[in-house]
Image 1: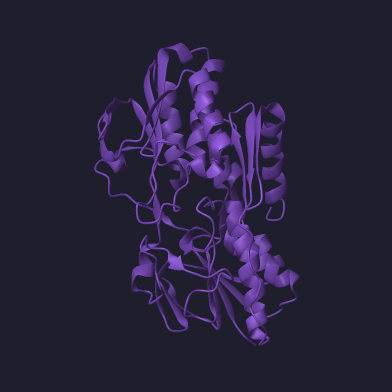
Image 2: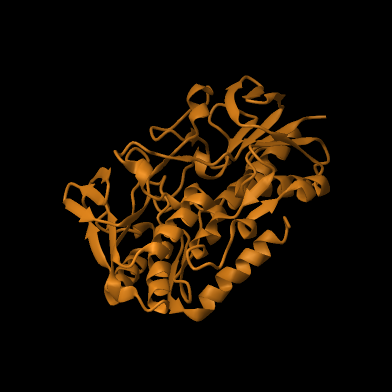
Length: 373
């Protein structure tokens, strides 16, 4: 029986497992990842307020793997050779492969190792939170940038949420007046992929909350207490920054076609260009779609479903004609409220800040994770 291998135990990889089983596939599935866990990155935004711990966000997957008859291969991928994946814990052969390994952040800016890149994990955010708690006052800088060779490879949403969430937290602690908050971005209209109304709403919220902006200036780097841009320096006691993304290092020697930005080139069926039996989903892939197509968990889920269905069609000798929808769903949480943004090729919806969206985001966390707990 054909052997299916999946790289990655994040959103895309696990959705691929569930889709394969729902579609009736009963054969062997091997999933490769460094640890048998799902880490729920979206809720890192609540760590500074003490609303989530590492244990809350780390979901052991041993039970899920057992229920779905998945063999977990605990390892880091090092290379790809023909139908064999090389790892630091031996090699794994496959007949069909779904790559859902995520991406890595571009760390080329000088001094970037000294700033908080929140989506690198819990420890980074907890360290930032502890440092913030010790400050009596000062300047807090928040920003994000894209991959200049692949502008779609960016994730700015979490920075907006950390910015507004920490603003709310400081107000609750009655010490907001001791801090200046600054938002910076090389883009003159940050968040534009959310739509024009969303950009106006986000910048309007910053103005309302007295958050200073520094926009449209190319990044130069960081040094102790300073963010350097071509439009001048920003003094900062704590800096949170999300750089652009590129593909995992092992892709460079994989033989797979890569975009200029370092991501795997795939078609609308999530099939890697030139490879009939290899698929790419989520942040590691460069897929056709609108310029606003997001790099977010929801998009990874949609692509994973598409890849799994096409993989099974290919095994049966059928046409691989399943496509994914380009869809953006985002609640920009402010710790006690939230703004809803929805975008598809046919419409864009922007709903203003309301308490119900904060509740909705918390409910969705519970609803999504219940399949894995």
